[in-house]
Length: 467
Image (cartoon, rainbow, N blue to C red; front, side, top):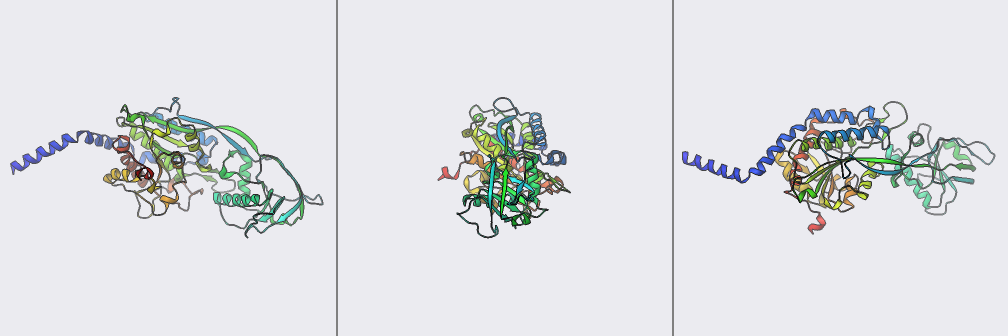
């Protein structure tokens, strides 16, 4: 018995000596994960998704406050700024605003036609005197043969961004058929009237996602009875405004591997505030204050352990909700060479798990690289599974900021731990509705899952290169 004990002890010592370096790294990771607690997660997200930050709309003062908060967290975690030492990656973006000055529309007899204001206008003033072409917008729209001003009643039931998308699509098809403007009949309580007021109250980023092909004027359905009209629509106000992504860096220690980076990212912006009564703030707790909370908490954890071999980048983007604008600006003018970004781990909506998936993480674009398999091999040892979602993994690969990097050839995926729940893009997306224990486990899982990447023992490859 004693002989067997001695043999076992010697074998244990031999194995321990052979893996001392790996064990030391594991112990350091276990110690650093003490930074990722439910209390710290709650403190972070309850601020980022608070009413005081008013939905963090891009270009709003509240977004700037949120960006300064993230920068301060990066600084406190021991990170340094980007290439120029700043925690901000700054660019300029064209902002557009609907004119708020009143204007009139008259019929052939010079009688005033009632309206609710412009939802969209063009970069040039539009003047018209002539026939109003009545159309049934619920039927198939003409593909040619239109001219002048078209009028029709909106009969859909979409809300929020989906509502705008539907009107954008209608205006686009009418423009392709030759129409120059749309008079859209709506009910007096239509959400479109509120959205139009918001467009007059504050500028928004110009992007293909929110650019109307023709001016759109909201009117009561009764105003469409006019057979002819006269109007002069003003042009959009435009200005260039500085925009900020927030960026922090932990330099790697290996002479060669430190030239490569692992990027952790999430988007800081959300939808801001709507007009109306009741709860008017789009707090965006799950989308995507949860992802930003993960990024700054991971920065705390990595900052609490000895520096890894690869460099780590941490970023919070502006303008994701307007068409991935902040990440697109970064890849156009990167402060770190894109070819030296080994992987982008973009974190999106991790606060509300699907049934049966508590503490689990799914990755978009699973078939595009082996990143998910590599990370799961590390995280599963600590009890957190990273998996391919049967529908969302392929469907949402291009829906978040990872896509800006993937388009440039970077291995880039979004990691989520929830679903498109009923509160998505609604004022009810409040931090109190999140499952903080689940969210904390997910952040811990991502920390463990990325260890082989940041230490340089694993390097993902794209499926295209594998072939």
